[in-house]
Length: 191
Image 1 (cartoon, rainbow, N blue to C red):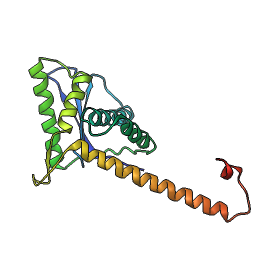
Image 2 (spheres, rainbow, N blue to C red):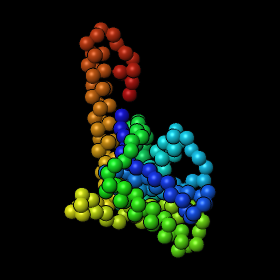
Image 3 (cartoon, helix red, strand yellow):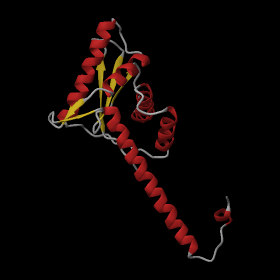
Image 4 (cartoon, rainbow, N blue to C red):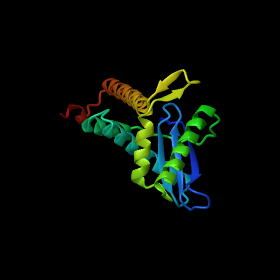
């Protein structure tokens, strides 16, 4: 089981508009994505959408920023699909994370005002997310700087490594248990 802690915030694109933007920020890396919305979603729908969107935005950020090759991104996504993520809804009280979310909200508002748009298109949402996720961010009272895309990539690699180690340990345990019995499984002899 893995969780990605973060915070979500919905802003109105302009006063009284039915078009809104969901801002999702992963707490540790400050990786941010934007989801244009104009319909209500159930918590389950929102979870599915977030799980799909964060991987897609991460992949596009890594590809367009030349941080990883396409084949490495494909392998990363394949490995991430094998991990079961458990959504947890918690109230975010970390003012530092809230500051990054507020900053992202200002970027959305200013971008829409500059371009004289009523809503954030999926393409513009991706462009804005890539830009913000490849810029250095200050964390821990301004002492350290991180690049959100690189920090989230490191976190994903750590999750994958831990998941693969767990699967390997379970497989070894199963092999040990099967070797201690006198039952022969044909599947053990397949190539």
